[in-house]
Length: 508
Image: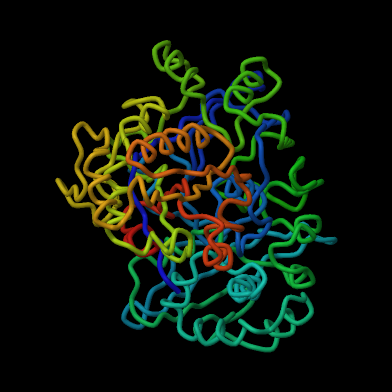
């Protein structure tokens, strides 16, 4: 399969706004954040525009979905919720009783599971090593496979062979259940009910980071009765986290209530203050609408929106206590948001994007400073000169392969490159750009459309719901090969901080 090309535009640090509906005061300390003034009780109301990508730990790879999964799923290890970026690097034990025992020259990880961690079944049932093995086996199901297969197939002994055999099993839950229960992964085994062991192909310094991902969650045997990634699985979700799924109506609402099987004594990471979490979708289709509901007291938190640029400046200048600009304690930008992804598989315009000079013309045409302003300026975003931001492994100081004056783009240079590629007034280049309809993505798409048109490239904009953006376009080979899109306004956050070359450089 031909690759996708990616262009770094601006590194935007997410801004979030929220208010507390609680009263009273106390201080709570866990492996997560220390929160002064927090009390237990009440309902957290979250508003936004779209749905999760997959209601399934095996496939969920949308940052918004991770908000949900942290409440209804647990992992052997987890990244703590700390105020400073430097404190968010090292995962801490979650379902595991301690950090793993590593033997065999760094290739064998033995992990013990915490007693008292339970599924919300009737009656409640202890999470076991067999559940962890089931969770790992589900990753390469053919219906909704894991979004980062290399983390597992290139690391765990026998994982690729297991996945290769799984690829053509079929889309029914029954067929997939039979395969999972009838085949083993050589490098993953339940030594006993509370001990799971992983054998690696070679030592991997980032394996604990991989185990801390939502992908690596255990799965109850009941999950095998449902097609992975399906809404049906969400309707029958079995939780080992602090909250259970009371109801799930796709694209409308998700209601979480306290998991009666969850014990705070078994969970050192999640304080679980509120009694209920109500996620309302389709009620805040713009950033402004979301913030207005928060300011009016009818909502507490944004779901898939950011603070609108017009509102952000006032909040920054007034030091609004409900505005958090992160990461804190680190002046380097961690993520790529947006990235302009170029689809080299597209047949459109006679396969124009396969031409290096066309791709270079697009690089020079983009006005990175204008994109940065859409996000709110230097306070939350600055243009990037490369695909690996400064706080990530592999960033090279001073590297800028496509410099333009003031990062404002260079339409003349772009036109010259297009001319060399055979495009111009008599043979105009026309491309389709897809973008997400939430937060500032529509404005970013319009800004890039204007910059590309100034360089002589006609851009057709196609709006896409955020939950369908990756699954139906960027991660869908048939859509890429059919030319349903040429350019996409994507984003990329590393899956973990610190030693994250496999999380940042490899997938890009």
